Image 1 (cartoon, rainbow, N blue to C red):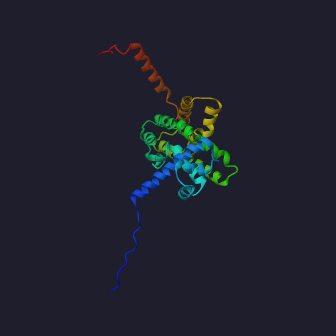
Image 2: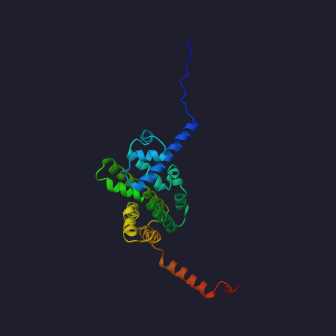
Image 3: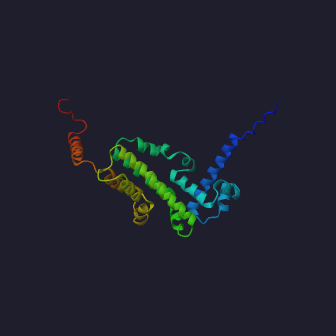
Length: 245
């Protein structure tokens, strides 16, 4: 009877995997800092030196400089390299938006995420946008990034539509395009960078226009009721008992 030969077992070391993950994290964090400060033209040797690894390690993990640049952008968009490994729908800010029952509050929470995204990722995205005309690989990366942004915003619009909160005169496709346009880096740069708005002013404006364009303003009668209630509370004062009390 022939002796059965067991196939070789794949060698997997948890410690090795954790070490590889830490190395990747260190490289991405260093790349995000250096790309933000010095642009896409920085040599990978500088990133390697900052990370304490060989240039060959960067190529082995990310394939190309553009691949590393993409990972750095994803880290900045997520708020950190570690957060970038968490699925978007499981990140606290996105979960809070999804779980919020009031659609206008949902839109306000969504708008609140935008200033931080543009502050963190803006330098790299501007470099990517400006370099795409001369580098086909970066042009492809820019197109992918914008397509991913459009798709993610389309998922948020789908949530509003499924809950019956979308304005009746807006199709989901139109609403997605509106959200994609108003939340773009270009609009942030025009208002904050060019016109000198504060992030708070930008967020307040963005919240108002998105609420109006996506779900519609609050009904006039509700506004009047809230205003009358506020006026009554001001007139009566906190210490005055209600009639019949």
